[in-house]
Image (cartoon, rainbow, N blue to C red):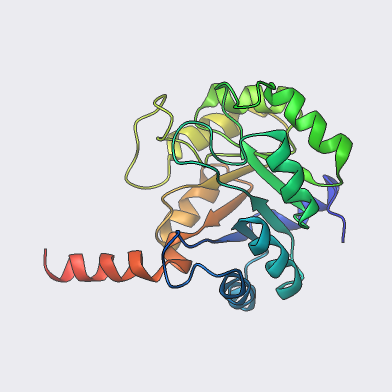
Length: 228
């Protein structure tokens, strides 16, 4: 299956589930990622977002919905699929969409965002999702040729205050600007009500990760509430 920009219409108003586990955790296994992804699809996920080359490969065999892939390398600065080399590796692993850092910060390989997006489009059939941290990032990402823009990094780049839930103000501002690309709400969406608010704010689709696929965090929320 090749996902085209026109094919993204099938994700409108849908839920995308991010299936990721952190290094050292019991669930940090590509086979487990694929199983969790398949379970999410049974529940109604229209697409899956996963981190790591093996995770992309296993998930592609486990589900028949679009897979958004990324490669986290490092922990600070630009680390979400930070270079063209990382991006092409994710595409070659089978991702229908490659998620990359879509901020205006300098990239480790010295390429501009536009050069990175162009390289992905030229060397693969994957679409590009730009993970942005601000309104200016979103504008720049669209100008750079990204196929989708996300609010993934809102609150993590120093341009915006980190909100307790999704950054609805940012979503509304980007949506009202009419940038012409699907706007994906991602980041700190912890309840079904917040997912609905993200759609109401203008999101094309909504990504939920931790609240669905990270048992350690979910357990901590319940325990914390019980002993507050």
